[in-house]
Length: 249
Image (tube, rainbow, N blue to C red; front, side):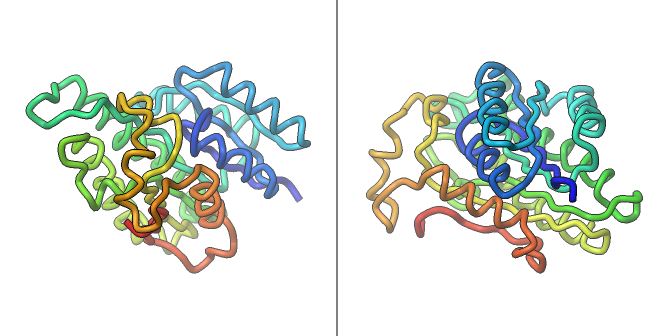
């Protein structure tokens, strides 16, 4: 049997990289998409291959349509039929109130987090849908508990972008349910990853832990476990679900 193929966007670090390694251990062939982190992506590919896994790394900015088309075309040619998409690529900016957020930041966050996810989901559906000669598959969108909380005084633009992902998950799940495609969202809470560097507060997980009922930040491994489960046959009757991995917050 051939390995099932998964594309993980933004897969060179953090939750994406951890998911790539776990998926490979579960027998998936992995395409690791990255925008700028070439060396990290290649290192991850080599690590997976060293463990007898199958992996490729493909540079693409998911907010640019021609890049997305090239990304999916590369998967078609090098790995074959796509079975799963993990819409993980996303950006966050430094903590700020709305009055201090400029148009460039809004466009950057929304273009990557929303448009990028839509473009990748569209191309995945074209390949997976039984109405397009596919054999089915699944899409796992990476949202955030920020979509519920709103992230006031920090990054309401990021929170709003993830709210859009929740809505897209619900709508697309219903749209393609009869076409053999499941669509779910994983909503991480406060997770200790490199992403906090981008907010300007790397110590945020430690500072915020008392706001979490479990009194700790989560790990990338805990989120990856949920993602890979949602990709698996164990979740065969799960679609349109918004699954919180947030320590009770």
